Image 1 (cartoon, rainbow, N blue to C red):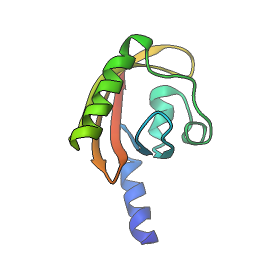
Image 2: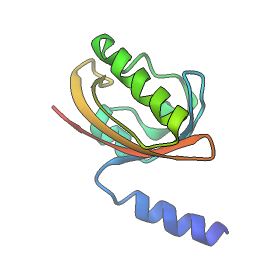
Image 3: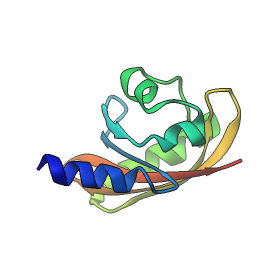
Image 4: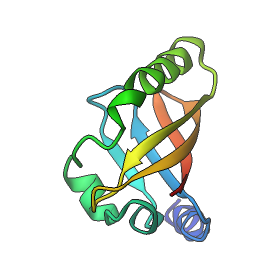
Length: 114
């Protein structure tokens, strides 16, 4: 099992997007985030996992993000949303997030553009 996890992690950490695993809901814990989070948003994976980053979704996008998550949770379908996210240095960039539901957790990838 450890060998399979190491192979998966090595693969994920080469993809040019942020890949993450977390629990659903506003209080859901982040379980894994790939190192690419630092290239895209400025946070190290450790910072993202060990502390709650400040709200990173643009206030004008909260409703769309919440609606997409609730729809995915309710129907079991994929979660797809585009929103603005705040980088560690305070800039806003667009993020396109796609998630596939699995056992009440979110597993997805996110790519960003300025």
